[in-house]
Each structure stands twice: as C-alpha cells, then as structure tokens.
Image 1 (cartoon, rainbow, N blue to C red):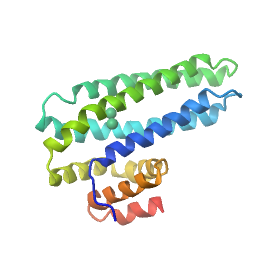
Image 2: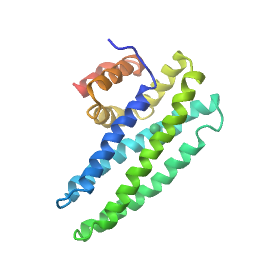
Image 3: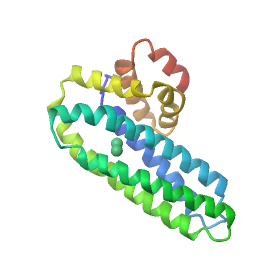
Length: 198
Ligand SMILES: [Fe+2]
Ligand SMILES: [Fe+2]
C-alpha cells in the first residue's frame, strides 16, 4: 500500500491536464480533416478540469499558502484570470469554426497558443511550489488543506474530475493518487470515490 502524499493531488492533476492538452493538440493538428465535435468535447473536458483545479487553487490552496508565505501565489492567480479570458476567445473561435468549417486556421492557432501557455503555467507553479510546500506545511496541515481542496466543490470533484484525472494517469501514478485519496478524502467519502474509478 502506498503512503499518502497529500499534495500529489496537485502534481498528478497537472499530469492528467498535460495528457488532456496533448489530446487537444493531436486532434487540432491532424493531417486529416479535423473532427470538430470531438475536438470541442475534448477541449471542453480539459477546460472543465482546469476550471475546477484553478478554483481549488485560488480559493483553498493559495489561500492557505498565503497565510504561510505572503505574495507567493499572486502571479498564478493572475495567470488563471488571463486564461479565463482566453477561454472566452477560444469558445468564440469554436462557434465560428462550426459556422465555417472550411477555415479552422484561427481556431487551431488559438488552441496551440493556449496549450503552450498552459504548459508554461503548470511548469511555473511546479517550479515554485515544489520547493516551498515541504517547508511551509506540516504533514497534518497538508492533509487538512487537501481535504479542503477536495471538499471545495465535492460534487464536481466526485462526478467529473476524479475519474477524468484518474483515467489519464499511468499505473504507478494511479497508485499514488489512490494513496492520497485514502489519506485525504473528506469524512466517509473514500468508498464513494473508489466506486468512481473502479
Ligand atoms: Fe493553476
Ligand atoms: Fe495547478
């Protein structure tokens, strides 16, 4: 049985998002005709995961971090805001692409820009957070923060994000993710979570 590493939830969610960005990128940059419906659904799912992840970061994770290390998370919150605006542009580009499916160039350009930008955001967060997290939170505090992250929008986590992330992890990562859930699930939720990934 793997031991619980609370903040692996953030790192592993990043890895699943990376897999989702690669799915979008492959569908957008195909040699064949673009399957717009599939591309849009894949993009919407990645966006949905990112939106919950950013909400968990802004409202819970970075909030707790600011109490320990003031000012460290502002740049990330700014990047989330910029991305939310960018999502609006991509959504519009999808609408246009559905009207005029001959010319997907503008949409593909935006999607490529977004996947690059988001990869930079993930690396930016990881480069700072991996260094400071072990120093600022005790193990017990980490478990509390991660329980609050999962519980922040429990319905969306349980019914969408959990299985979306889990299904994009490699086997050893899945084991770490389940170890984290075992130690950090909100009261009486672990068994429900298990059913979602069975
Ligand atoms: Fe973020
Ligand atoms: Fe993140």
